[in-house]
Length: 343
Ligand code: NAP
Image (cartoon, rainbow, N blue to C red; front, side, top):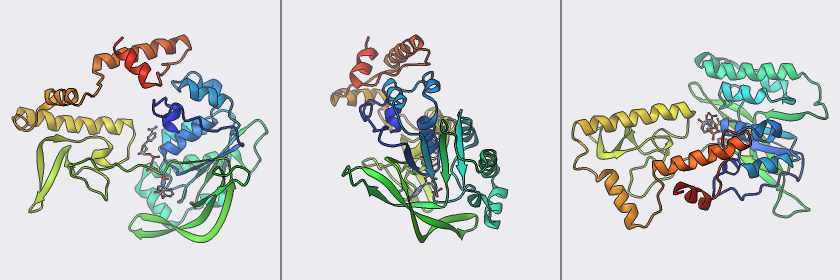
């Protein structure tokens, strides 16, 4: 769904059905869940001046979704959101925020978590403030609604009687938090269940990288083991042995966490390791480098887009965007992208 509204060529023809009912459920309370809620709830007149893909904007203009449930298995203190992203959603025009007052009560363990993390405390305060501002009144008929549902974990999807193979709701189990190790509280099911009716369920419960052939992989953490970006091939006597000329960055290096700026710092660290190794001559005989890569791509007949070709795509998208007051209008098929690259 995220790839669909962002114009990824493999998903631009997804055609999610946004007209079946007025309700969507999103499982997970991280920034991806929040992004998806924002796209479903923000007025399309505002989305129109962003870089959202044209096909998604058209579908959202016709959408009947008015109510979004954001479901978390833990509480407001544990929501995996960041303040800037949350503020953006809470600031959506004409949006009614719903949070049950009982979900906002905190335990001593929650207090402890907030004492140890200013970020968690900030999120809790933002949610409490939004709940207080909305009060207990019902939404006005012209308002859209965002319900933060805490202490619920998904149990199963409910199938529609009228439309086999389509979802009509989601069954949730109530949870309580249990402390497992110092500072960590996990959700435990209580055996009590409830349903939310909806015509769409989206899951946004995080990611896990997959191993690449012949590359060392830590299956538990879902990362390629590394020291400052240098891939660790084995450990000898407790000392990590790095593979000369082999590096990793991004989520494959640290796991699926962090905002864009985190990835910038992460990449800088890996690049610094590469630079140091080049200076010390440690890379020379290790790998064939970019020349080797280009040769391999040619041998395998792989179509590549180099930087200047990417700049052609970038310029075209920006030019198309300027015609409709958007930062860019994305090209959403491989044919169009490749044609523009070599134009
Ligand atoms: P995330 O931050 O890891 O959040 C995942 C959410 O799913 C959490 O609420 C988690 O709850 C829940 N969850 C995980 N497994 C579950 C299960 N089995 N059942 C029910 N709930 C489950 O993942 P994400 O939202 O995909 O984001 C990934 C990273 O990208 C994050 O670091 C995020 O900040 C970043 N990101 C940033 C931006 C931005 O900067 N604008 C936008 C999108 C994403 P628990 O905490 O209980 O596990």
